[in-house]
Image (cartoon, rainbow, N blue to C red):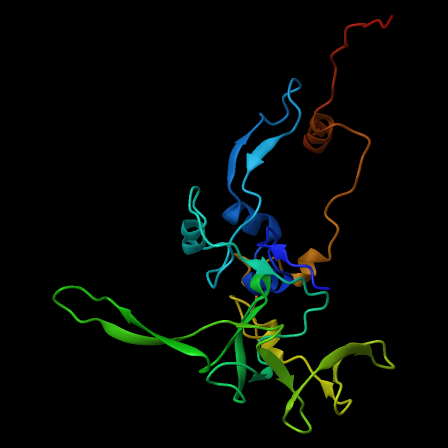
Length: 253
């Protein structure tokens, strides 16, 4: 029996990885908090009124277009999403389309939208739309790829037979987790393009920017040593200031 979730309020792991942004920043970008109690106020418990579910689309959660599509008061048709325990599709995978007018054709995954169980295959399952049309201009016809459901619309291609196949996750003798084709027992490696982010195509080719990035050598250094002192005492010690004031006596009953 399949259990479906209505929409979602969590951003997928692959989306966060591709954004190369802190999860806290992405959350602040898309969440909508309408009211919350004053922070740190002793008379209030922490509570807030916020949007509980979001409609994820091809626009990424940290963009302005995503915020416009999820504006307060907008009503859209409900979307039910089937939970997937182990995500098996990555950018750069060769897949075969199982439905529609492009059924039987194979292509490369160019984008993964994990929140909706979608993949977009380059050059396949396309739609034509008119952009910039007005009374004086007929507009421009643009071709764009539509998303495909990974649960029913696409399957991975077996590297041996070059046909669609079911896969399962297994472990090698070295303890590495890999995808294995059920039809030929061949390993389907995760493409190198799966590690691509907004900032770089490959980790090995990325050049660190000292003004923006924390250099790997500096990240390994320990720059903080805990002390049994308050912040003020620590600053005074580092500046060579000695405390010569005598604190007033206090009594506890």
